Image (tube, helix red, strand yellow):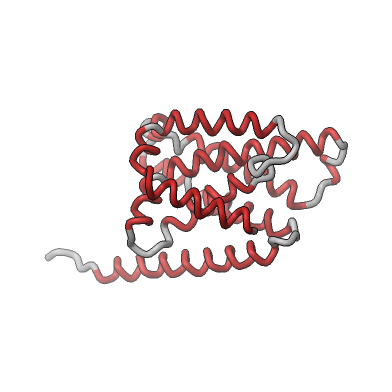
Length: 203
């Protein structure tokens, strides 16, 4: 729990300070993340291959749209695509590490439910990550892109259930995060709906 909270704080601070540079040099940032992920994959246990880093990135992506108007929200929203891609890079490393572990120790078909939910989450995540890359996004119609990215809610649900079912010492922490996200997201959607109703058509 302490690791995830610390990572969220550090990553949020980095975005707050370096938001413009992250957007401008995003391909280099992705390349550095890939190198870190490859190194982490070769290690027995790290905060990357354990899934903490990927989860922290996606937490920032999830809460960005639910935050009250502020400089931090503006910066997080400005880097939302980059955060999602980075979270995906680190999450793929986490997923592959555990899939290979399950195959090596011959329990792939007898793993707990959260293992398969994690695999499903990664499969849903891949097209979302690829279409978050600006050079791919520009080739898509806006309507098609938005429709595809509605799958992000399924992805978030899979991730939240995945971490909750692990049932470790961070169980309560993830439950609280889930409740807070659902409450804030609901409030945000209701607020937007109320603003639309207030807009009167011009005569």
